[in-house]
Length: 128
Image (cartoon, rainbow, N blue to C red; front, side, top):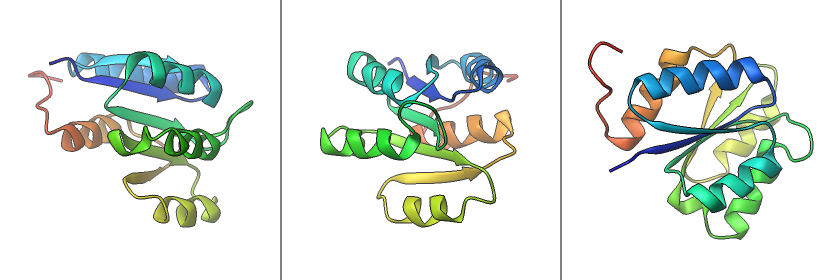
């Protein structure tokens, strides 16, 4: 079974690093640079995991999650929201959203990969 991950972040280097790390672990990874792109990709690819930044142009991570919830898609996803340590509002918001987890920046690609593996009950490819 293909395990699909969607990484949504407005910083291209974050997308590239996470995509590489997750692909090395055997996951199919799609990327989006904002919430609008991510929403379309969720509809088209039906990922099991969404990793999204909070602060992005066009549609931020909060709006993305709220839209997915309104469409009934959030319950089928495991969501990791990424934010800076100084964003106390994000922590309160994530705590109010069932099934949504929070990871504070700076990110460790290994930490993200390990979270995905734990959420999916998957085993990463050997040596990754």
